[in-house]
Image (cartoon, rainbow, N blue to C red; front, side, top):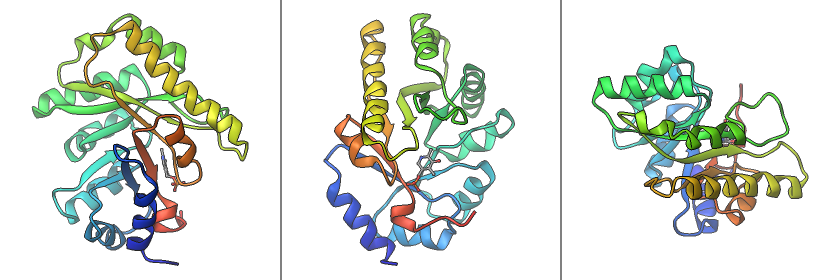
Length: 222
Ligand SMILES: *Cc1c(COP(=O)(O)O)cnc(C)c1O
């Protein structure tokens, strides 16, 4: 397989300016993450708390770690401490737990709300209706330390590009609806959507952040 550096260069050359690349390094060892770091990559995505904290401890301190997996409330403390963004807030209970912990740590915690638009039932996240309800109630006003920066989503796992396009467009439209309802929301700009196989479609639909793993690092061995 071609080098991590080459792959990163190829992907970067396809990203419009303003689209951030999250290199998803889950299941890959620290040495290969270090190669991406050497090639200038600074944002990495991990989906398991223990793996994230172990890697964060052994890699350079200026890496910005994004948590992208399902976060259990009993793992909130180490994840808040190690990350610059939690992209996968999938319940109000988790949001409150992250807010309490971030306040305790004296840290402003950037998060994204994960939306479920895909057809697979197994994926987590708020339904669009739940999110609209959350913002209609202005439930974000009680947050002390968390800043909601936008939305994260995965499209349906399918070869049907029309369906993928529709999923991502739904997320972009949802962000617009939320902003219409709460025009005073500040910094609610991020749309994290698109992975190795579908990120060009996500960019067409307005993604500001793409999360790419296997195209950079090769297939994962679970
Ligand atoms: C694993 C993962 C990715 C990256 O997937 P690839 O197909 O390897 O690019 C992106 N987003 C989330 C939420 C993931 O869990």
